[in-house]
Structure formats: structure tokens, C-alpha cells
Image (tube, rainbow, N blue to C red; front, side):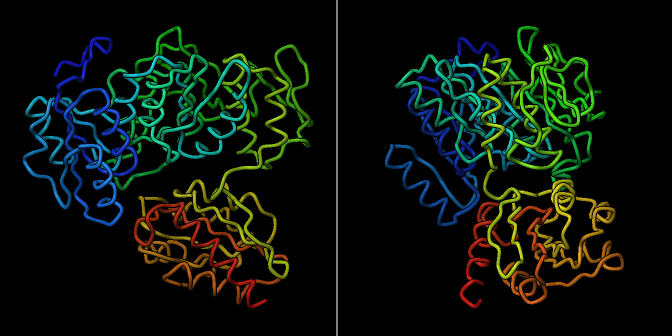
Length: 459
């Protein structure tokens, strides 16, 4: 199938294999079928969730297979790949050898919308920033919709708009490095790069390989587009130099090439008009201030009034699983930061509290440098480890901090509850993927929340 010219792509009568039946795969299959393709879905798993997904697709007339990939997947004109399938997978190599185009779900959905795309990526802060931006953009002239790596597939949003076109639509996308591995035409009107730090090194051969995947997000942008980037991240600033888009920085330090500057008390714009007093901002922390500035810069480029941007800064209180306050039990505060799936996110969490911390850390190791946490542990009373990475954490931190192996999240919460004193913080900030014991980070955070709320019964 020829896909070099986006405007001439027609799926009618084409055979499309969708590999992976998570939410994005299901959405891509439905979109492809609605556009006239003959769709076949395939997943290595046969879990209950995947079985239910296939059952629902079969109700739409879509055929598929579970528990492994047969030769049927190669009877295709096009492949749409789940983010969970690594780029060096053997089946992908076979497909490419057969000259079958392989693309991501994000790329696929982007072919069928003319609405502007604002795409946000970075190692940390993506989810918070896209939610901020989505709220800022809700206005008389713009009706944003949030999708991508936040659980709402881009393909579902595009399919909805095909039947009910919305001239005010702007797509706000959270983008992971995985979703940028197989793109060809994907081109945001505004791309936002928040930061770069080691992540997913269990999937990429090194940091450069990981960063290169993220840099694909600007690869098709032109001088008519915008690249908004964190000017305080030196590595990022160097990597975006070749981009053709108009580059606009946001920064806690710089006062050139930025739309918003700040001093000790306020944020102000290029005309020196006050945007907001810093004390009025809802979410504390320098990392959140940086996220606000990135979102505000993009919103301004979309024509959003400063008053609306300031209102969101005053009211936006964060997202679930990101430094989420769960309970205060006998003066002990329980914080759910399950979204912290890499070591740098744990550093941000630790630096957000002045109180003594009991840190619940661990899960499936993504190649993180746990030793780099040590300079941030001055307030940590005890590290309670869970999951597959317990031994790796103990090896590098066991002599530096008080550390206890708990195995399960339930055990860690019970130990924390027994050991915590009034004024302490019990912080779930795992620094690892969740897939050793949970379906995803949301499941892990929900379990933590439930366990903590269960403690109240015994108070």
C-alpha cells in the first residue's frame, strides 16, 4: 500500500492488521473499519481484558486472534502497531521485509483529521501539562479534546469527529516515545517538549535512542508550526536545534525568547502585564510552575486570553496518581504518586515535601539509576520496597538509607502505617513500571488508595 502521500490515502477495500488489543488498538480497528478497510486484529495475550476486547470487535464484524500471532497478520496492506510492541520485534522485521507499511496508532489517526494538533511529550509532567492545557483551551472559539497516552485513544476522537465534524476542534495529545517510533506524516501544529531524563531504558538501547524517538515528534513540522520547549533543559535545547518549526522557550530562568517571565512574586508577559501572582497558583513546586508555563505558552499561541490562562492556574489542582493527597490519618499524610514511573519523577516527589517521608519504591525496573535518588533522601525515614526491582534497589541504596523489603504494596502500606508518626508523609512514588503486579499505574494507584482508605476502619 502506498502511503507516501497522506492526502491520497484511501482505506476502502484495504486489508489492515492491528497488532495489539489495548485501548488504542481497539480504537484503531474501529476507525479502520469505519473507513472501509477489512480489519484483522491480533494479540499475543489471551487475558480476560483482551478476550472482552475481541468479543466487542467481533460484534462490529472485525475478525481476530489471541494468544499469539499467526501468518494471517501478514495478509495485509497496512499494519497499525500498539505502543507496547517494540520496534525491534521479530514480527515487525518480517512485515517490513514483506514491504508492509508499519505505523503507530497516533500516526494512523492523524491521517483522518484536519483539526490542529497540540502534542505534549517529555520524560515527566506530560499528564499534568495536557490536563492544564486542555482546561485553558476551553473557550468560545476552541473545543479541545484530550487523547493519546492518557487512556483516551486518538483514533476514537477522530472517529467521533468524522460523523460529527466540529470546526472548533483542537486535539490535545499526550505523547510517549513509544507512540513516535512508527510515524511518517504526523505533524503537530504545536509540539511541546517538557524535559528529558533517562526513562524506558529497558526498551531502548541507550539514552540517545530514547531521546531520538521523542524527537520524531517535530520531524515533520515546518516553519508554519511551533515548537515550545523547556529552555532550562540543556540537553533538550541542543536536540531541537535542527527543527524547522518556530522555537519558543518557556523557562524559570530565561527572559529572552519566552512569552512569559517571572520574578520572585509573579509571572508577567512580554508587555510586563501581570499574568498571576505566584502565591495564587494552585499547584506548588517548581516542576509544576514549569508545566504551567509550557501550557500557558501553547495556549497563548492558540489565541487564549491571559485571563483564562490565569484562572486555570488558580484552579487546577492536579490529576489522579500524581502527588495526589489520599488521606490524613492521625496526622500522617498519604500521597499517591503512582504516575511516577521513572527515577527522575521520584526525585521531584521527594523534593516536594519538607516532612519526614516513608517512601514506597519499586516495581518493574526500567533501567533507572536508583543511586541517583540518594541526594534527595535527606527527609526519607525509610524506604519500603516492592515488586521485581527490590533486589536492584537494595543493592544500590541498602547501605545509604534505612530500607525494608515488603514485597507487595499491601505489605508496604501496612508497614508504613505501623511505623509512621504524626507529621510524616507516606509516599507511593514507585519509580518503576507497574506491570509486575498491576495492570498499569492507574491500577496501582487505585489499589494504594483503597488500602489507605481501609486503614481508617482501624483508627
